[in-house]
Length: 481
Image (cartoon, rainbow, N blue to C red; front, side, top):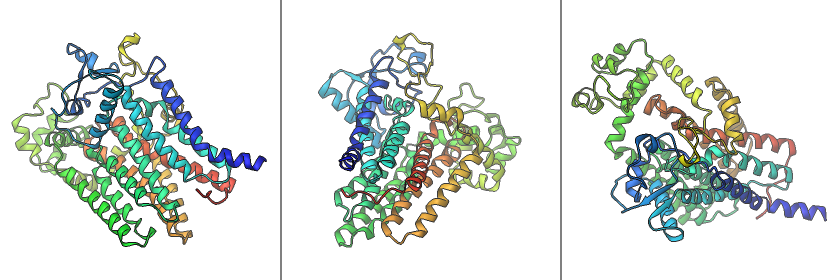
C-alpha cells in the first residue's frame, strides 16, 4: 500500500512542481506590489518592431528609464523597426495573446510573464520527467531545487520586461530538457529532436552575443546521430546541425553595424583602456592613434566626451580599424591584463538582477530606483554570500568538468556519454558567456551582460548537488515512461 502510494506520488511530482511555479509567479507579478524591471534603453530596439509605444508620450527621461517599471503600453502599428531576433517572435506572441484576451489598444506587460512562464513550466516538466527515479527523496530534492533556483524572483522579474535575457533562460532550459529526453528514450522521436533544435534556435538567435554558442550547439546535435540507425533520422540531424551552425555565423556577420560599433567602442575604451596604466601604448599596440587615449574610461553612452562617439574622425581612426580579433590577440599577449578583467567579471558574476534598475511601478510611491526582492532567497543569498572571486569560479568549473570526464570515461553506454556531454555543453556555454562580455563589450553593464553566465552557473550548481544526492541516496534506475 505504502509502496503504491510512493510510486503514485513520484509520478506526480512534475505536476506539483508546475503548481508551485504558478503560485510563485502569481505572488511576484500579480499580488501587489508587483515586480518588474525598468528599461535601461534596450526596450527601444524591439518596441517599434512588435508594435509597442509608451502609453504616455510626455513621460520624462527619468520616468522612462532606470527608475520605475512600466506595466501598460500602447499597441501601435507593427513592423516599423528592423530588430529581428527570436525574441521578436516571443514578444509578438505576447502582444497577440493580449489582443485576443485583453485589449487591442493597451498592452499589459504581464502577458510577457504568461508566455515565459508557460515555457519555463514546459522545461521543468521535461527535466523532472526524464530525470526522476524510484527514489522519492531524490525526485523531491530535484523538483525543489529547480523551483527554488529557476523560479527565483530575480529571474521572474525579467519576465516582466522587454529584455532579451529571459529568452536565453527559458530556451536554454528547454534545450537541456529536450536533449536529456532524447538520451532517455529507447527510440527517440523525430518530434522530440525537432523540439531540441527549435529550442536551440530560439536560444542562439535571441541575442547576437549568443552567436558563438550556435556552433557548439550544432556540434552537440551531431552527437544524436547514433541514437537511431535509420537514414531519415541521420539526415534530419545533419540538416538541423549544419543550418544552426551556418545561421549562427550569418547572424554575427549581418548584425546591425551600429551595435557592433557600440560593442567595439566599449571593449576598447571601457575595457582595455579602463584603468590602464599605459593607455597610449595600448592603443599603439592595437594599431590605433595614441591621441585617442583621451577617451579612456568612457563608454559609448558617456555624454560630452572629448570626441563624440559618432564623430567622423572616430570612423576613420577607430571603427574602421578595429575588430574583436585584434582585441582577443591583445589579451592573449597580456594574460595578466586578461586575468584582471576576469576578476572584475567575477565580482559581478554572482548577480542575477540589475540593481541599478527599479522594480516598482511609479504608482506605488516608492523612491526612484527602489528594488523589491520578492521570493528572491536564491538570488539574494547568492549575491551576498557566494564568493565572487575568479578563483572560486575556476575551481568549481574544474571540479564540474572533472566529474563529467570521470562519468564519461567510466560508462560504455553511448546514451550516458551523450547525457554527460549535454552537461559539458552547459559548462562551455558558461565559459563563453563569461568571456564574451569582457572581450565583446568591456566592463559596461557587466552584471546584466553576465546573465547567461548566471544561468549556466546555476544549472551547473544544481546538477552538481543532484549528482551528490544521487550518490548518497543511490536511486534505482530511471522509471519507465
